[in-house]
Length: 165
Image: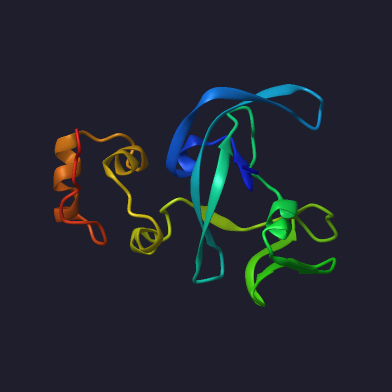
């Protein structure tokens, strides 16, 4: 399994599983770090109406930024088109993700996205159906009672979230 994305923020995940055994990884500074879990991340691309579901995503608590692997996307059949102003990944000829320079003239390219269910919970549910534990984490760990009633007082959420014990 080749990871597409690495993140140091547990809140990025819509689905997460701790690894049975941590994986030691080398960083660009030759230091060692630990990969302790993996899961799924939803990205809403800024300026676009689509959401991208990315898995596997590895959780590395020491990271201060998210890292994407262009090589893995290319091995997965996506195509690359770019110049000094933008780099686009294409899937079946359609734009999948676009990277822009961090600032004018920069050689580091970034993606402007929202992670998780921030832009639209309904859009995320079309791709992934969150369970109680996902809602519990996303809403800053409210009690079972609060989650039972949340749909009654909000727009776009199920009227009742099923809690499995």
